[in-house]
Length: 532
Image 1 (cartoon, rainbow, N blue to C red):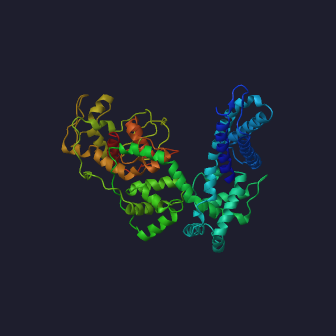
Image 2 (cartoon, rainbow, N blue to C red):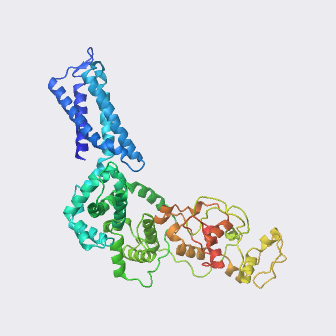
Image 3 (tube, helix red, strand yellow):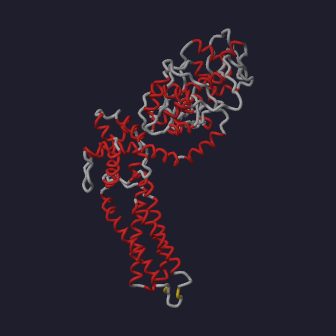
């Protein structure tokens, strides 16, 4: 790392001297050479030769690593290697010109700028990760950090004495030496430190690397495993903070989109029946502080239980080891500790009684008409893949006679068009003789069974909000993680939407709700989705 910093410093010094010594003040246009003082020319040569010596020393270690890598070289490593090769070519060319071919001396500034540009690319692709790995601030060996590492490492290692020996300042220093000396013989630093991991994950990675054959590098011994694991766990919070900075721009873009949402209230969920605040706090410290400090969680902002559950689900996608019951307990604890920010106006509660339907019958679009048309990934409660076709009919079975009577009241005018026989008249609806233009009578019974978007919204918030958000756009932590589609832009047929709600979607995280929603609840949900 220090050689890299000195390498960049000498490149800057050499270019500044070159700009002065080969500038108009000393340049002889007729002879095509500089008339600068010999002393400063020697200083420039000294900077150049020192730069070359550092380059040779770095290549002595770097070139053999090109065939030690056990995986395909990532793009960043390829650019790093290309920059190193270009520096070698330019450096040799410049030295040859100065020693043998002075008639090309006029091109020296171009060579100097090329060397500086390649050096900047080379250093800035490697030094930042080296700084993290060397822990210049000493945070890794801080007493409170060692206590945190000791607590998490004891959960995956059964030997208390070995854990205690691996979490001392001396062991942390040894772990750093193993990382920078042995691990980097087969991997670049970014590959190792590109994302935060739990102590258990680091231990599994180190043991897996230990089992791999080493041809040219130095193998990791059994004595190295726990110290390097402890060191990697100790620097994980810094890795997480670095990742958080990298994602800042993406978070700002998402915030701009979220600011435009019209309806983000949602319902406040209640904690589990066996909610224990003390157990929830202990679980938070055991699961969340492995990668995040308390300030990071507080900076995320408040939310209700559904919003926090979405965040926890996204962390599980990242590899967090959290069981479903633990996720519910953590969501309740976080919602209590970091509640939603108060809004400027109080949102009215959803009515608990049915609302009259519009007189123009615009809710018909939400009904599941029988069709065998397209059924793509549906904009319903869950998670969906790319748009495709559903096989067979998307019509929904009618399970009870009461459901048939209910359908008759709602779709009397459609039955005549389709030429289907009318069911026997009931007290709720009598439309057997209705023509194509007839509309079922709007008595109180018909109004009471008509799909209600307000009730559908309550169902959506209770079962779908964690993934799709309260407005259906999918801009939740978990929804963004798994690529939930925006329900407000879907063009799916109502029958296709209904089918996926009932049966789920294979290959995605969309769950099936058959048997979990009644016919009336499903109709209400479809009415709400049709208005998104």
